[in-house]
Length: 96
Image 1 (cartoon, helix red, strand yellow):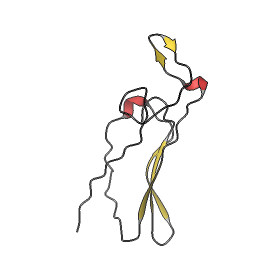
Image 2: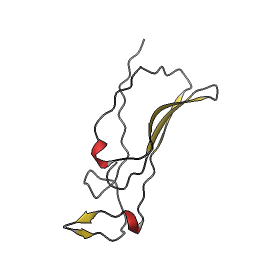
Image 3: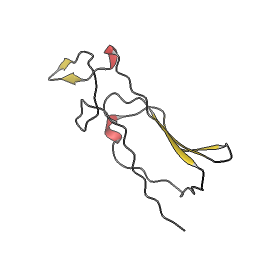
């Protein structure tokens, strides 16, 4: 996420109905775009799913400054530029 991301949460939804939080960032910062490594590996079993929640804030109060001027609200599209937005997660998995 870039400048309009608010928070991030990743959960494993277990086949039996429970869920386990894997990542919880309650207040996103643009400068945290790097990677995260889990303190301990998680096991995914058949029927488990991953769920990601990443809300954005595109209100007039949360617009970026460009050349020292606040940008007005505008449609935001997927892209890699700072004024675009995205939700991208990459996972490394191994089999037993």
